[in-house]
Length: 433
Image (cartoon, rainbow, N blue to C red; front, top):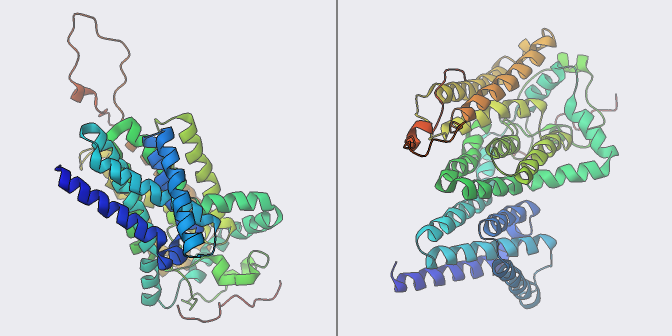
């Protein structure tokens, strides 16, 4: 790259960082949001994991202080803790951009692998709200009664049970909520770990992470819903309907204002993908991914943003996404084809059954429980074999000194055949039962 081009790109990156870091609109609309601030923090995690140095850490701190001085002292923005995390993220993005411009060879490739995906992660999160608002304008009514009826057909209303547990254990609730809004942390940790371990091959998990959102929002439109907290409002989690009441409930779409982002649960899909892609990384990275998997699953239910069936459907959906981007396997590979087919078909079958034939689940509680367990078990089984099929064949003995080593392509994978209308929520005024 010519020197003039490097200078121009450096100036553009610096101006963009300064523009977004000091914009009144961007600060109030995004940077003070805890969720978006932690998304930006993911950029800092990737930055310092890929290039861990005291110099870079000091530059991030210096950038935070500069933005804080401009925004809080000069522009008089209302100070917010989330703003500090956002400042760190914007600074890291700028530093990674500078390094991508001025380094050469493998170093540039490494910094581009960190910078471009980090920028796309942040951008996709910023525009996600626009896509959800669009879905709300397209679907003025939602199918929450259908999803609630399915959960009740299990004869255990798990979101309400967890919601009451959260209400009685504030520390547990706060931990789960922090995990829920800190979704970018395991994604950043796992992606950075994959870069350090596999280099360019890490793009596989990056594509899965970044495309999960847009594809998931398309699936939201099949059965638009919000979650039990939106359906019951202040009656959640203390006053669910009795099982017999739900059995005879008239199921119909209802008008409730809010984002149509219930099924499948993308939070659950993301943490599942993070845990699956953390295989082969360090114990610490695996532990972080597992921690978020457990607490995000609990939070999605306990805070009333999702029904249990949303979590169940997230398993085949995540499997579908992973197999879609398993491009290290041939497209007709037996393991990949099975995972892709089951993931997509199981997701679509659940959505169709919930929307068009919801009463079939009430014949006996055994039926919905069996379907849920089978969906999760088959999904995990196929995912395990999908990942196993991409592992290099382990070498049990070193070749003798005089023998030529086998070509690397023969050990790349095993081929064994085992594999918003503002209406009042319908159930908001239900009296205590």
